[in-house]
Image (cartoon, rainbow, N blue to C red; front, side):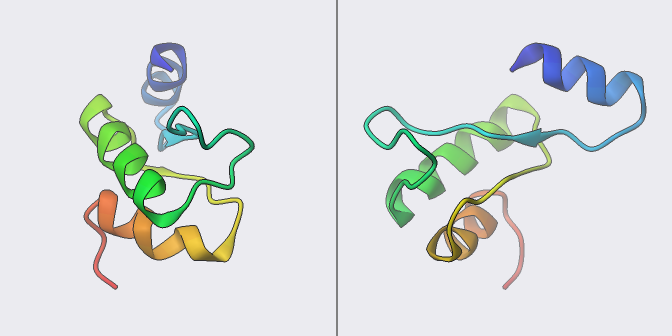
Length: 68
């Protein structure tokens, strides 16, 4: 994860996380796990994350502090 951040910042790009909670592998975490992973990703320095399912979008936006 740190390499992703360093590479993105070095090349002037936004760093997107694929940061999932244990127990929700496969990218299909529920809204609670997605929001928690997004908050942790934001604290690590990521700008956003990728969502594998539509139900994750609002939780990811909330975790990264994006307005709805």
